Image 1 (cartoon, chains in turn orange, brown):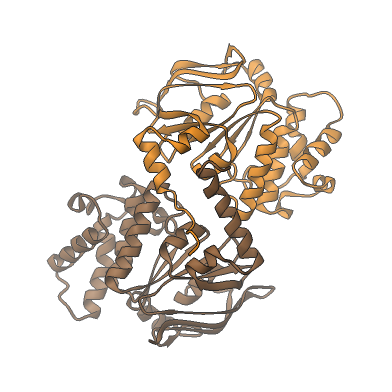
Image 2: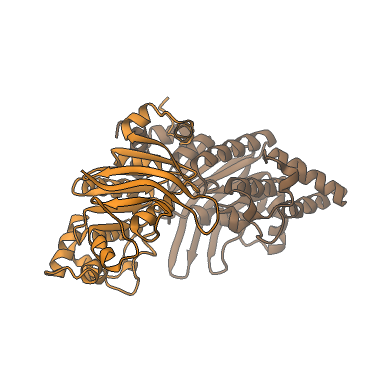
Length: 250
Length: 269
């Protein structure tokens, strides 16, 4: 059963050239899909469309079998309850003036989720590997990796069905990145995930399915393992060949 | 062979915090040296200390000897002579390193003219232009005749970084500092720029201080590396040795993390 279906989607800003052209893919429930592309690939625009921040000019996006209605406020409220996002920069995505408690419970308030919000926040914050006293502190008291865990707690607190992650580990140091990738992997076992990144290594470590974007088009899509083993498109091949690898032992 | 750069017991601090301490290393003429560190390790501060570009509030102690000149405590006048002549830097983000309102050719012409003057050579418009064209070809800039008149925003990130490298080389420095020069670039462009920097410093016999958080990239570039953490060196040695048989726990963790993503790419995630 497909949770998100993208059908022949095209998009351009103003009258400019096409940023996305004829994009089609589907994300089954429970899947963990990596969307890989370099700058200018259209991956950020595609993510905006999936978040309902913009609407495609051609084609359509279906969520759980029905068209995503980006301009319908009532629809989008329900959509946000089911679809949450984690962004790249944990320094700008958390309001510095608010306690973590207020930041993590924000989706529960704005989506009018019934129940004990503080208890839900406690559960979310411990499930990302932080302690409950985190909730009484402020963002500046945490490192980049911890802030990204807080952003993840906020994304999962309302128990969404789909998490969209936009370069969500790219700003993190290597040693932190490994641990946050592990956390995303754990979370992806509980919900559907679309992980957008320029970093093929991270996506290879995290996602079962892979979509490769180049200049607004999908050039290759399929099982991550199969694409890594035997890339078909010349762009995928050059992308894989360009990634610097660690030297082998003497 | 005497060392081009010798850093001894370097300590950098603000009134309430020590940022770098007990740091000693040296780079020989023509050597490619890699400085590895995560954010907050002090690696970029170290490079600023080498060029004497530390922010005024920072206190520097110890010794930084570059091409026979003591940088620490040196008057600005002496440092100006050192920059360009002995050392030039390529930074991470070429979009902020370049003047957005000046055509690329004119930006390269600046350091070219200063160097020709320094060498007592002819500085006519034609002589400078010929040198600018030669530099653009040296950094393998595609279509240099057209790009000479282009503005930074009109070219790609990789081409901007080529221009920044051309400006650094225009000075004919003996030490090139490259501070995360490929971090803002796409991976395909990164590979080209890494190859370009490595081959240029070898060709010209320039020593290289390559600063990066990316172990694999440093491994491709450097002959010797030093790993920094929280302002101290935790490990140093031949690049291959440090990256394949790390001794320090922190380095071991970093290497393991980098190898995990490599393994994932091989389908062993």
